[in-house]
Amino acid sequence: MKRALLLFLCFVTVVAARAQTVDTTVCEVLKNPASFDGKIVRLKGTVISGFDEFAIKDSTCGQAVNGIWLSYPEGTKAKSGPVAMVQLRLDKNSAATTIPNRAPVTLDKNKDFKQFDSLLATPYKSVTCLGCMKYTVTATLTGRIDGSKTAGATREGTGKFTAVNGFGNMSLYPARLVLQSVADVSSAEIDYSKSPAAKDNSGPENIGDPVEAAHSAARAFGGSSAGEQLERAASAFGKPGEHNGVVVSFGVLNEARPRDEGKGNAESPDGLLFTCTFDTERLRGDALSKAITHVGTHIADLREHGVTNTAEFESHAWETVIFSVIATRQKALTLAGGFVVWNASWTPDERNKMVNDSLGRFINSWEPFGLPKTTPSSSGS
Image (cartoon, rainbow, N blue to C red; front, top):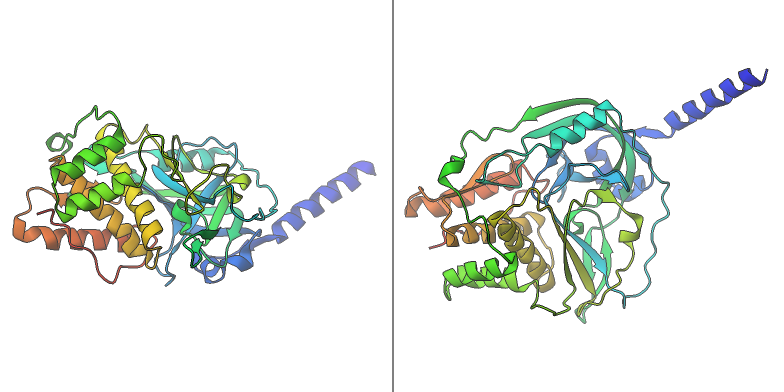
């Protein structure tokens, strides 16, 4: 009798757990992320892992951000994730923030998950490519949605940042999925056939301090607008010993840690902390300096202008990276998805058009952002 009762209770528990899982889509979540906050959902989607992307994407959603940031539960120690990421938090002197009390998620590390993680962590082995993975992965994903009404950092009239909402890189994503299980895994190999050969594009291997290397790239342009743009990016990290709210760390930041939604332990002149994490296993040598210029542009732009258009915000950062590539006389730069955004073999007349077209196609086709209204000119001349 006791055994029968135990089996019955187990059956009821399983049925109840299944009933609590909401079948939905990426677009449905993005229509109203806050309404899904804390819910366990099951959806099918294509996951991209790139330079500062780790998201379940659907370009048909018609939102400012057409993707849900993906994270693993704390302690997973998985291999896949973004190559570079900036985490925003309010500083220690800010008003108290409430950390959401969401039910913890336990990840099923079965063979499907191991395949999923391995595919997304497989790099495209070429020095011409910055943060490029070999595959995109489509799968059925089950996990907890963390949803917010807004995304990004909010600043009051005095210039102080007073709130941070959203998830993922620069808190640009209004929704995050903390993975519980994965099934039905399939992959598509990304076409990099149009990328220039690696042997034609070796950059310096030993660059020393990557921030100083970014300053050096700026000096190569003299007092030109390109040089000023590079210097602005490098200066965003502050001078040695300066406490400007920017912290650099190294490793993989692919886990959802509840404490990261609270205040930080350091001070910042405008109340906002930037924790910049770089995966040095996948950003070797000069690639780390290029990552510094990209992230530095984000920091400077957010502090000076805020984020009014996510696609233009990202496009401007990649434009700065292209200037850095030109300064170090590398022959080409390819981005995740196989988009060649710089090739020294382009004629001067071709450069503006090719860079603008390539950046536009990269952002519209790869990243979960809408196509920018205008794409900056990036000839470097």
